[in-house]
Amino acid sequence: MKAFFFGYRKGSGHVLIVPGGQSAFHAGFQEEDRTIVHVFKGHVDGGLAPKWSGTKETITFTANWDHASDEYRRVEYRLTEMPQGHYLIHHANGYTYMSWWDRTQGDTRGACNSNFILEGTHDAVKMFDELVVHFPHVVENLRKAEVSLRQVVLP
View 1 (cartoon, helix red, strand yellow):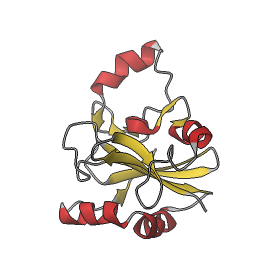
View 2 (cartoon, rainbow, N blue to C red):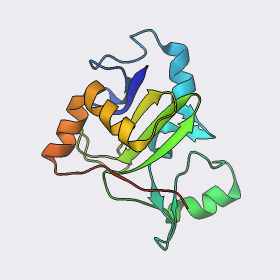
View 3 (cartoon, rainbow, N blue to C red):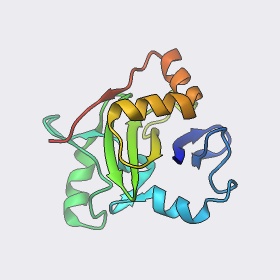
View 4 (spheres, one colour):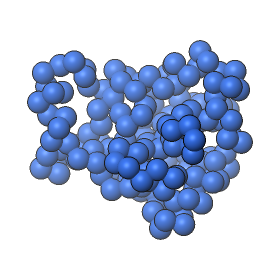
């Protein structure tokens, strides 16, 4: 089962990495990079993490929107990030994505996000268990910052 982490890595910015910390590109997954990071109509980087609607009544994400559309331009600026650690689960391209806003991995700027990507279709419990196995440093950084991972569900 293939596992990837797309998130901040010091010195590289937001990048797709394999267990052990090597970039997926250098590990020989160039073609998979494209399939894994381009999901729905958008990009994993910030596109899959949960956002609130302007009134904080609805949870959404923007990778499923047509970014050239008038609707996206009209609505996107009114969306706000949910708190760090609140994540959504997505299934696409034969993988499960666990995506959240995250400033605990070394980049404290806005729009920082993390994504754990696991081959196959999995539930939240399996995703967390595998995150601990494949990327323990991510979990440790969250723990040190007292950020807990909590699933949110789309309406």
